Image (cartoon, rainbow, N blue to C red):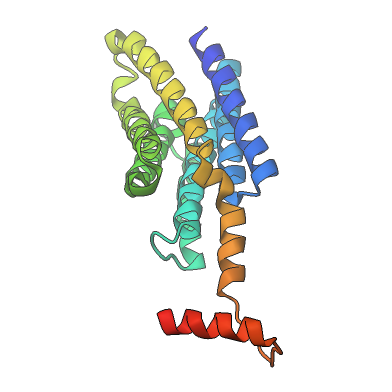
Length: 236
């Protein structure tokens, strides 16, 4: 029941993010939409009992989420990242592939190698995404703060998964916390992308770019226009 509800929540969030990406031309929303779709597929494979694909798509969710955060940071010019820095976002996905490979060639605990460690690693990147979102509170206000806190809590919960999941008495509490944090993250990201600043960003950037362009050549103007320009320059 809990996993089914989480699946529905993440699918709704994925569809809304993809809708924003389509209608508002935000690449970061597209990346986040694919991230939430990956999270939904992770739950689907968890329900089906396919552990490898469960952890793989959860890692892909963390990678895409982190990549989307970096993209927004660049779009909003909060920090500057070189293009090569985006490859850092692929680490959870690549490491998970590596751990699955080790499982086939080494004598390790299957659950820990295919579920526990990948979830812990993915949780770290989700938590880090929340930390990087925090500075956006200066412009996105409470929406960014809520998203950041939700991601940090969700990531911390996944990081404790390898340690606390095998503890029988904590399992029901863990599932409840997972459902709560899933709702918080999905709801907060929808609220974040619904803000006017996020949705109007492409048009604002295009306007700012056109305002900053200076055409070369000679412009012939009339006497009245010349007086207007001269008065403007005198007042500056």
